[in-house]
Length: 488
Figure 1 (cartoon, rainbow, N blue to C red):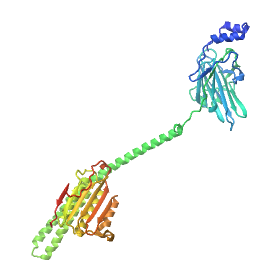
Figure 2: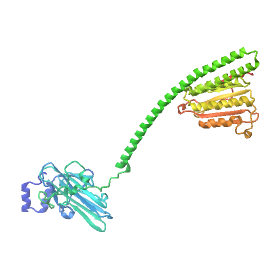
Figure 3: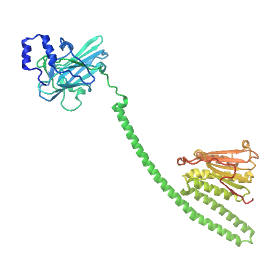
Figure 4: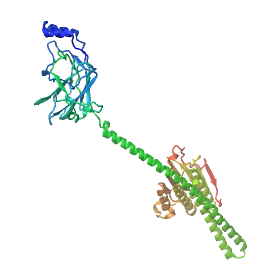
């Protein structure tokens, strides 16, 4: 602490040679200019007014030992009765030379002008229950002192005063959050009482008042609380672990899928090379035997049946190889295969086949269950048209619309009455069931004398987004490939 007055001035006061008013005016003239912390409003005390114990201020207190550049931490616990409502709570404080003020562990103010008492309105910060006051005082040099007063009014109840006296405790000197530790007040040493107001060397100080605007409690939202942050961290960690687990599962699934595709290619190759070769050899042997037994009509007829069955088995085997081969799992390959099948199938009939296929069909993945069920449904529709329609022209249209692939089989035959169709007629039930298994639809439109239209629609994979979409054309000109049957 810096020295307050010169020795000659102290003697001047002790002798009382000058009227008090002149002394006070002189002190006002020579005393330093009062300073306030940012946001504070400073009110100078009148010359005939000084701080006394009646201003709800206590006594000057400090630690048992005093030295320069000293920091002392004071603690005081008090309790507001349950159910009490604080109507007014005014706090006064000053420390020679500076202080930091805490309530319940939260810093509410600072000051560095020991000649000035700072007034805080803490009404909004106090409620029923136990509270902890904490003051961190700093002594620059010479004497150190701390004076404090808190006056709490609670309506009809008796006011409560908390002042600086020997009921305070000197808190710990380490860096922990001492001001909010409710146990520290009972475990640390007791300060010493230097004396009442205006005791030497503060005979004429504090002098002046700095008023701080009313303080309000800090609103802590739920997302700022520790439990929410901990829960958020736990959720993020769980999501990260779940994502890693999903990546592991996807990697394992991709590896298994790759192994499965390789195995499907191998099986398709083995079936084609082994069973296909044996069927071809059986067919050749049957044809040779048929020529050698030309003079034996019964044997020739049997060999002819064997050859026909062998050819049917060879065609069926080609379909199995195509379905099993993973290299054929594309929309483009499916379109090409279905068109070739329809052409070859209708060669032996009097039906002329027209193909209307969307251009630039992409080689996007087309899963085995989808393309197999769709192919079998189209095959059933072609078979029904060949057997029952009595048509001379058939359109096979393949196009995309709204991320779906549609295959339409339309003939100009005799048609039938949909209302009189049995549940099993023309394989309509089988086709509908196959489409339902893969999430597709089967629509049949027909009337007597008006032909028949069967439209199969299946969803395309996500990779097909952004494809060029083209609606079917009925003019029979663009992108049509015409093939006549054997009877035309």
